[in-house]
Image (cartoon, rainbow over all chains, first blue to last red; front, side, top):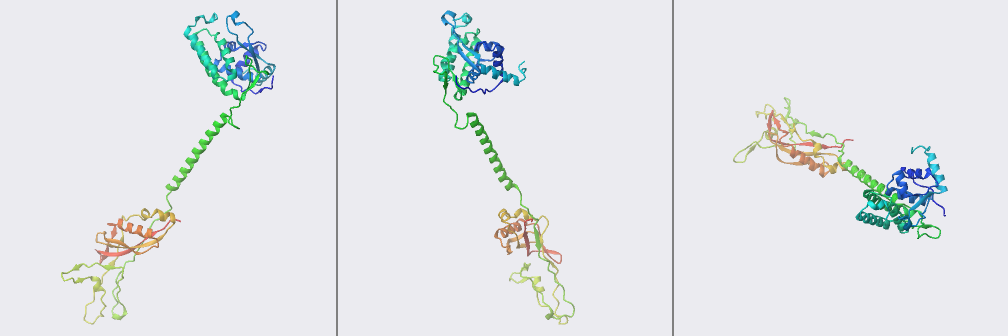
Length: 101
Length: 302
């Protein structure tokens, strides 16, 4: 994996997305799951996911299912990287870990 | 089709898929197929028609945002179109040294600067035109009244003679059929006969020359603006002929120039405008028609 730009423009919506992933850093979530948990609309959510992925905070991969067997299309799953986990933790630490509470 | 999607109508299904397809087409080329598949998969989690339409419309907006952000980013593409290293460098669509946002900022700043420059320069010109020049009240130099003093008793004719100024002339008061004119000035100008010679003395006339009277126009109203800008100053002597009611009877003339044609012309205008506001000359207290001169001083306030 190449060198990434870890500088990400922080917004309230970005912090909400990171908070969802920080609840269980090893969990893989699709965009629909993030929407269900934080309520961010698709017009805002997907640009944030792409932005964080471009910055190296997230990695994504297709869901390992057979669509014909599952009866639904495969989803794109996002997961925090170690860099993303560290950077997100630093961001929340700078906000005293309570700004979103 | 999943169980969640069973409540959706066929038209809703087609509309939302069409919207997502169009949104994915507007996304960057290397993300288009991935986003379309991802959004269609996430669409299955929406159960109501409104939420599906909202999701599809949000994807349209997301594609625009992603398109605007992608040129300066490296994007991981894990779909079937993924490159060997998994990263694709998209071409930079910036404007040289400036981004689109910086260019817009400079454009707005430039427009404001041009606007302020225009306001400042136009206001400066207006200020220059509005400020009145420093003027000083005009000074009218009256010609001193001319009086005739009776000669002392015992003086001979060779001791003194009466001279009438060329500038002062008396309008004939009586003209007979044959054209003989008689004026008191002519009589007063006759050589004095010493007493004892048997000839009667000429009557003594006390004459007071007229001049600008009450209600006469203000010189400042007639100061030519070009002369003000040029700093022209001077005294123009104007000769007028005035009747007994203070009205000019002949066009006024310049008796002594100020040295500036514009000021002389302005003095003539002032003299014409003052008709009806002249003091008539008097002889023995009675107003008479006469011609006299007065000076009009044009002077800028220092």
